[in-house]
Image (cartoon, rainbow, N blue to C red; front, side):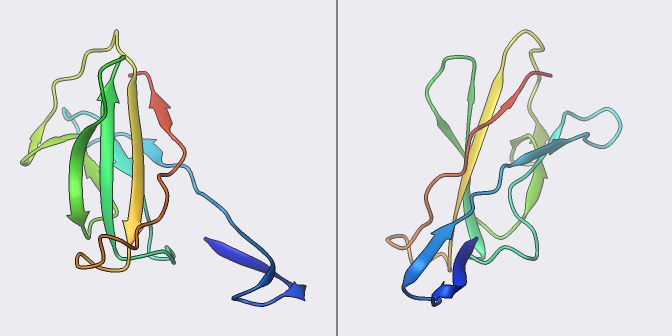
Length: 116
């Protein structure tokens, strides 16, 4: 979220900055793995999102690209991912105004580290 000092700045210059909001993890529906929330209705940096994950020390993998969802049950193509409770799961997300503005994306969010 963009913010600025209303005494020493304006929406476009002066004292301003960005607040990066952490992703959240929550329970999935009964019998399904966890859910990840990367945005909300109050998100101001865009309406489509890219979400990545990694398991353990593996490289980052794309989970969602140009999605309009704010959260999802962890998995691919509607199939929940089998969870290995001995591994750490990391997630990060970024936003953009729409799917056609690939060059105008936010920075990646802080990494959410999750140990099931």
